[in-house]
Image 1 (spheres, each protein chain N blue to C red):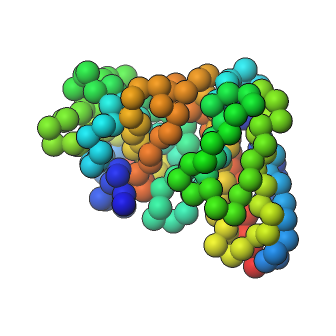
Image 2 (image 1 turned 180 degrees about the vertical axis):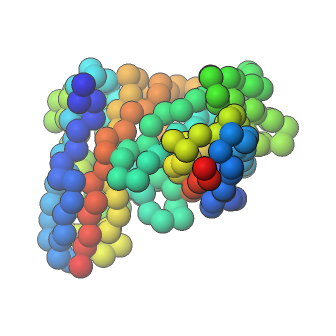
Amino acid sequence: DQQVKQNSPSLSVQEGRISILNCDYTNSMFDYFLWYKKYPAEGPTFLISISSIKDKNEDGRFTVFLNKSAKHLSLHIVPSQPGDSAVYFCAATTNFGNEKLTFGTGTRLTIIP
Amino acid sequence: NAGVTQTPKFQVLKTGQSMTLQCAQDMNHNSMYWYRQDPGMGLRLIYYSASEGTTDKGEVPNGYNVSRLNKREFSLRLESAAPSQTSVYFCASSVEAGNTIYFGEGSWLTVV
């Protein structure tokens, strides 16, 4: 039972445009969400997070939106740059402070120069 | 700044052999984790240690054992490797439960 779903395995976006990566979850107890970025042959690195008390969190070119009623979150990258080409994982946890993160299957983002 | 260091980076095992993946962090983190990544499956938690002296099963613990040797080190052991354990293994740590998790670079394990 995949509790965190990233339904798009891959996404290609022109450099300078907006990249939108989507994530859906089924567990209504999830209250803290994170995005990780992974380059080939490296470990995932933390990108941005959001708690369920917010519906938006912004950090530079990266913005995460949370729609609790739809159990959906999205990561917006604008403008997209070639260095953004990577696999992006969405993750979620319950009871902020719980050590078990549940990850999605990832979306491979390719930025086309 | 080393962060999370795991060894070996690559390993080929025969079915039935045993091996230990080593992990150390130098960030004085309390919590440590072992994940595996398989194509189309995302990252799945094998075991975690919320603090020194404690370990708990994650989502896919079967076939593995762990040891939290001290605050810095958390090892993962495969007692009798199986082809289904062919995967990329990531060690990770966090200041404490619920904080941002920092990952090592990964260990590629192939069981033939």
